[in-house]
Length: 148
Ligand SMILES: CC(C)(COP(=O)(O)OP(=O)(O)OC[C@H]1O[C@@H](n2cnc3c(N)ncnc32)[C@H](O)[C@@H]1OP(=O)(O)O)[C@@H](O)C(=O)NCCC(=O)NCCS
Image (tube, rainbow, N blue to C red):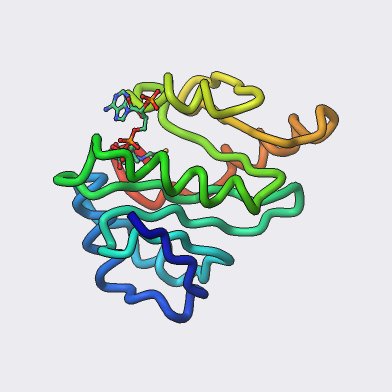
């Protein structure tokens, strides 16, 4: 499996929209696509993606998704390995009820369970943790009534 790392400008946005819609059950809002991400890791067939934006404290993983028919093949694991290899600090959030939380708990250095979200981080300085949590929970909800 190949993971391409194109610059965001080189990404075929309608294919990413289709991938996210398949993965999450509905496409993100137009507001999400209006924000240009800093890095996108893509499975070569657009069956999985990890989308990152640079936040003041490190890289924020804004979307991590594998299309419905490709889940369970190890694509998320490959995307994760590609991104952590070149991302010393990364943090992200997931809905409390997301079934992937156990895996995220294994990947992260630490996590904080809040009412709606769990925030995860890897590589953060301890002193930066509160600000990262605040930053993550303050991000817009791009996919209504579902995990993002
Ligand atoms: C979460 C997601 C990206 C995982 O992608 P995937 O390619 O199916 O995952 P992989 O096959 O690489 O598996 C990675 C690990 O996650 C575990 N896993 C995958 N799907 C799981 C599920 N539904 N429930 C529990 N664990 C799961 C695997 O067992 C594996 O763990 P291991 O390495 O300890 O064996 C994918 O299920 C998805 O797109 N879900 C919908 C969107 C979403 O919720 N994204 C995350 C939002 S924060």
